[in-house]
Image (tube, rainbow, N blue to C red; front, side, top):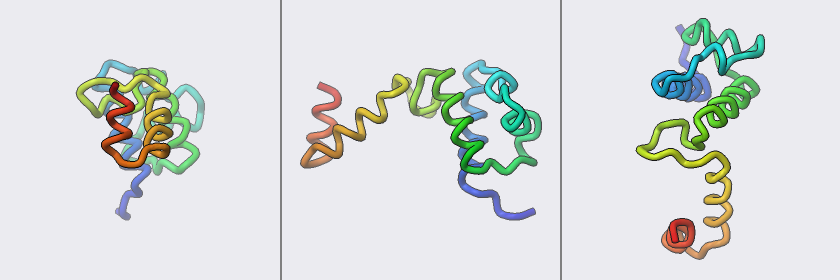
Length: 101
């Protein structure tokens, strides 16, 4: 068995997190390309296109940009705002201060 790529590992972790929060993998993978990932996750290599679809489906279903990996959800779309704030800030401290004030 070859080395699993990073997208496959992260995609499986995201799917496991979604399932742990009560989501149905078959519903997340409602198109033909994604159904393979739900039915046989260990046999499917998750390529960038598949990962993109899976990423959007899980984040949308959970309404959480961090896919359930953090103690509190980060409302979908918030991560982009955080990154934009960080790019405009002089330091990480300033960015976090601005983001959470």
